[in-house]
Image (cartoon, rainbow, N blue to C red; front, top):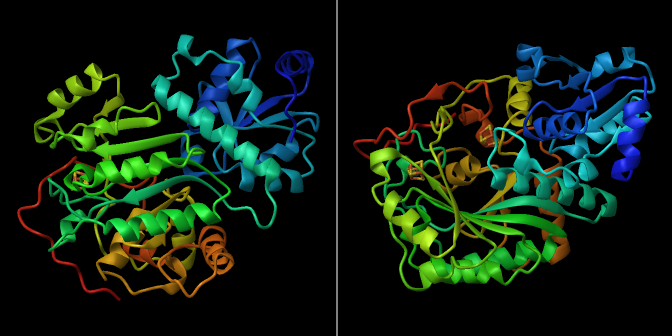
Length: 406
Ligand code: SF4
Ligand code: SF4
């Protein structure tokens, strides 16, 4: 993959007669488009094989083509990989013998996105650029024994102050929710970090993470990992943290993401004032929900399950819950609730002292590399742009009953 210095790259692109293609129509693709057009480079095509791309046909009035159609272009065309699954796309393009494959590192690095209306917040842009750079760096250093992750969801409690009937973390099914055991949680994080070569971000969540009164200790523990770039705490703004649980937020690596459920987020204004007064970075987002929080056997074919998994927005994450590692929060909580058949290959027990670190690493690598889909995908509606949208945060009147599984 080419990573020419910026001026050299732009000169080449401006003088090339062959088309320029951006692979990826989502946010990374949007950033690449703005970075290129900002310096006067014309983008001829977007390329993407997703259903979304097939439905859309063009973006910014630029046609979207499939990877098969790349073969019809002038073979000197330039293509930028602008998607988070670089490790999957790069070999696909290399197999097609495409000559001019570029990453977007220098493109992103040399663009001041603050002066461009990308439709994203500056924090979102920075985070994506950092993740992209980390992914490229990991690719360059990667070998068989290297294990790299972008995000780890640390679930610190099964409890929530709200009971959304379509919570995608399945809080609506917990009869006796409990907080994570601190020692077990620390041990799981230590073990995971021992086998991980690079990791960009910890995401602290629940339920509502501020319900766990040990959150300060947990965040301080996460802050001891110097290589982590960000620690994001997801809250519904119903609880104001106090003492150590607030003090730990006063760190440049901490970012508080408030999900704004309007009147349900009853402490939102107070929390925002406090965060502002203490220079703690935050954002407040009014969410859009898809129907991704219902436990129901879907009776899907193998092909449908593989498609669902491949297009799911959760597959670049991993989740720690009660000493175990899972591929997504739905799988984590569905297993934890015994709501689906236990699939041993979907779970890594980080608390198993009989396993060596090398054995654990092998299991974790298999969980992240070899999966066509998860057992949980059979019972989940999916999480992509095609999943039907639903009203946000409707409150359940009582704990929902777990359906009998097949
Ligand atoms: S979606 Fe609702 S129930 Fe689920 S964690 Fe968020 S606030 Fe709690
Ligand atoms: S589709 Fe599969 S991977 Fe995606 S959230 Fe559902 S269970 Fe998890």
